[in-house]
Length: 86
Image 1: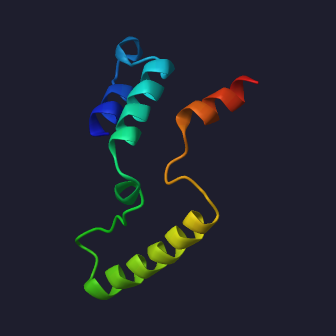
Image 2 (image 1 turned 90 degrees about the vertical axis):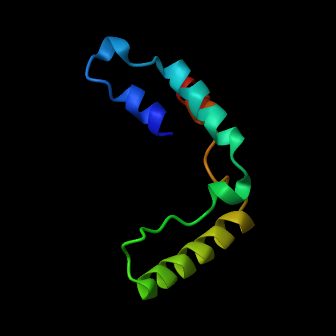
């Protein structure tokens, strides 16, 4: 993901990838990761343990809500892009 963001933020706009390439690369990254990995909690190691536990609990609760309501871990870029074209 860092490579994708890095290429999208190049100083010279001519060197940046076209949106179609960005979507393809993002989709490739997205499909290479498991559902569990996509839904994993991201917490800084600098956060004190107690706050980390609270953040994990909140994330777990939200994840369960999203799973039960059939929300994707990360939206499908093809569907979002296609909806803007219509």
